[in-house]
Image (cartoon, rainbow, N blue to C red; front, side, top):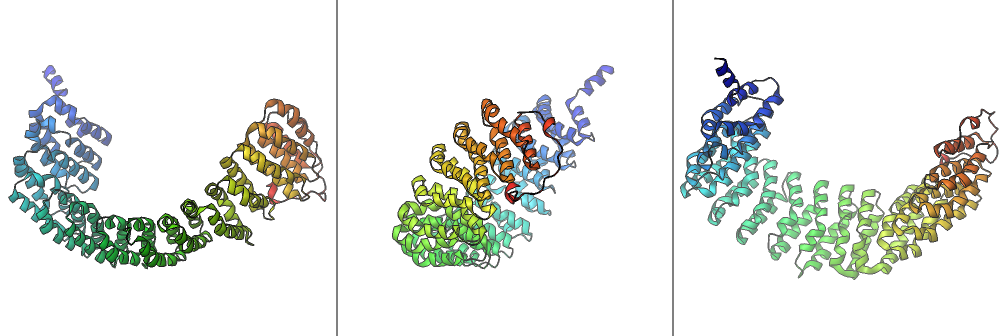
Length: 614
């Protein structure tokens, strides 16, 4: 008797039942994930006769368990005896396909689609199609939603009579009272169309499509725009053009902005599906309407498609259409009240330069470019500058500089420091677009002049700008064109300009490396330790701490340490503090004898504080 009990305790079904009754949900999920192992142990007959009925009995578990079950059943065909017996998997999957939780239903439908290909034509008609019909006729909305995804996998393998029944079922779903069912049917219309014969496309798809495209709910109507794109390559040209034009004429003037937005988003894909004549007479006016739409989201989506739409136009009329019918509307978008619309336009407008050629670019695109370059939104400016290469390739660097430099100089010298700051931030990008030769000739002096601007934020930005330029043009260029100009600032009467020298050395040392820093920049820093202004002296200490990390130890010991020790004896408490901190960070000396408490000294005439030292 004991032996019998022991055998029973090791029975796979008993183990599974115990685990599925456990309160720990993770243990139940793990047991579901081991179903294939249990099925192998049971054999195909017991799997069909015992395991599958048990699975049906546990359909009231947590969603996580049911999700794991739906995934497992999709791989069970060999475990139930192969394709001949695959229909035994349909009952549990049918129950899962009507579950309340969407993710469980979707996984069950995915498994049903996977095993549908294992069915023979007779089994499709005897088992799979009846399942689809039951789902279609189900009272639960979930049931009908799941049915929408199954037509495309069973339709090709059944008889003509059954196909007619399936088509009728799909028509019923497309006109269902429930919005979510119609939406599911609309989403699956493209997949279903792929398995239909041409005659059925003409007689069935066009009426279904027209009804859904006129649905009272915008969530259904916007789906039809995408469906139209998906099925465009499947339809004959005459049907296709009628379908596309119906979609555009209805959707481009739809009362819902979401539908119009979808049209703008998919516009170029629809454009490629029709003949050039249709594009000129039908799509160009529709595109103009989208560019003038009263919703900024729609205008932005249309603006993003501007370059691609123009590229797709027939060469026979492309230039004329762009100049007379597209650019006038683009000019309005340059001053659009919404920055996202302007940003979208700025990202594509220069892409028209190669299409229009040099003369048209200078006459028509250049004014738009210069206007966008002055835009108050940083994204707009960044987008238009990032695409400057399109214009440079078409009109050449000389003509481009002729138009662009006056604007740059105007902005660089603007009375508002925030405007100057904008140009500085984009200077590395402009330098990359123009190249080293042009930059040295036209923009280098401008960049150096910002180092002595009266606004600290400008001087700080100019310092970081030099670092980015050196990263772009190289250390040799820095040694020849930047460092000498920076070092001359150390002799300036204005102590703020002398401190700018230190700030530049701090950032340039990072990109120029040890050799250039030691030979060319360190001597100036050491010399400035004797500056009469305390702010300069304690910034010397901070600079030595900054650049010390890249110097050789011998240089630190012989050149840096003596200067820092001297500064620790400075009469100014801030200088002493930062000198001692540098010694500590660079591990160059003890702390105790230097941190002596002293009487605070009266502020001298030369001891000035500014945001530069903070």
